[in-house]
Image (tube, rainbow, N blue to C red; front, side):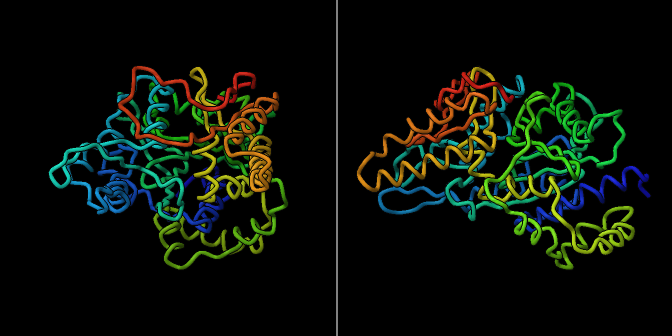
Length: 391
C-alpha cells in the first residue's frame, strides 16, 4: 500500500489529470505497456512500437503520378536518425530534434530505377487526426550513466514521441510558505540536469507543473521564475466541466486503476467525488493538451533565439491569432496581400515587450531537415530578442 502522502498526490492531482486527458483524446497506457512499447528498456524514452508502424502507414513516396511505400531500410534509417541523435548538451540536442520533428527528414531510395531523396515526416502537423496520442504515468527512466532512475508523473506521446512531461503535487504539500506547484517545477528542472534524465527532455517541447488549484507551464530549460499560467480568451468552464465529469468506459477504468497497489481505495475515492468543479489544473490541461491546440502551439509558437528556447504566453498566442484573422479578412477584401502576414506576426510579438515568450511562425516552404550541425541554427522566426526570456 502506498503512503498516505503518495496516495493523496495520486488522487488529488495525478488521477484527475489522467482522466481528463483520456477524455480529451489521449489513449492510456499502463507503465508496463509503455515499457514494452519502448523495447523493454528503461533507458529508451521513445515508444518505437508506436512510431515505427506510424511511419510506415503515414509516409509514402509520390513519384511520377504514383505512390510507393518507403522500404524497410528507409524506415529504419529515419527511425535511427531520431533515436540516435547524440546528447551533447540538452539545448543543442533539443533544437536539433525539434528541427527534425517539425521539418521531417529525407532518405534516399530507388524508385522505378531512379535513386532520389524523398521527404519523410514524424508528425502530421497539418492534420492532427492522422496522429496517435498516448499518455502514461509513473514513466520510469534510467538516469544518465547510472542504473538508478527517475519517475516523471505523466508523459504524453505523439506517434510514440514524448513531447509533453508533467509533474504533479498534492495541493496541501507543506513547503514552508511556497505553493506545492513550485516543487513540481523544481523536480522538472532537476530532471533536466546532465546527470539525471536529459534524454527524455531532449524530445519534450511542453512541460507542465500541476497541483490542483495551481498549474504552470514552460518549455525545455525554462528557469523557475518564467514558468507561466494560461488563461483562455473566452469562458470555457462549461466545456471543462463536461470533460472532467464524463465517466470513463469500464475497460479504461480497469487499465487506469487496477495495476496500482491502492486500486480499490482509488476506485472508492473517485466514485465518491460526485460532480466536480473545474480547477486551475483542469483548465490548463484543457487549454494546452487538446491535440489540435497542442500541435498548433508546438509547431507555430516555439522559437530558439541565441540558445534560448521560448514558447508563447497566452497573451501573445491570442494576439497573434487575432492579427492573423484581421489580416486574412483584409486580404480577402483586396486591401492586403498574403505576404503581409509574416510582417504582422513579427510586429505584434515585438511590440508586446512584457510577454516573456515568443511564437514560432512556420515558413511558407518547409524543406526536409538536413543532418544537424555542431550547434543549433538561429531559427528563421520573428525577432524576439526584445522580449524577456522564458527559457
